[in-house]
Image 1 (cartoon, rainbow, N blue to C red):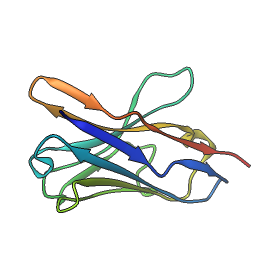
Image 2 (image 1 turned 90 degrees about the vertical axis):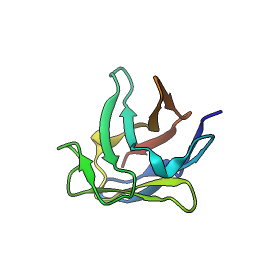
Image 3 (image 1 turned 180 degrees about the vertical axis):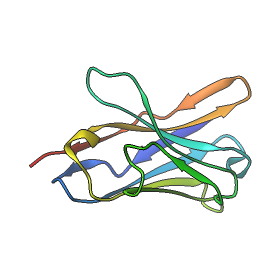
Image 4 (image 1 turned 90 degrees about the horizontal axis):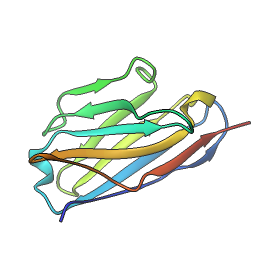
Length: 116
């Protein structure tokens, strides 16, 4: 059974930093592209960042480029998102996501609130 468990969210002031983690199990983590998506209250899901199998290729939404860094540790089956220079508009629930076979899996999410 595919399981994704996010952690690391919290309340932070504008300009602050957080590091999100996603612990993965139930599939061969190192064989799959992983992504982070977020959803703000009242809005649809927004793709944030993706990383390829080995971690050598990463992509970012324009809204987070230069501030967020995605990475992975295949030995630990863990995905990360380092978020710096956080802005009010980064407030959202953050989810890690993987497509295995014909199914898309997403964790329960971790809440990030940026507020002064």
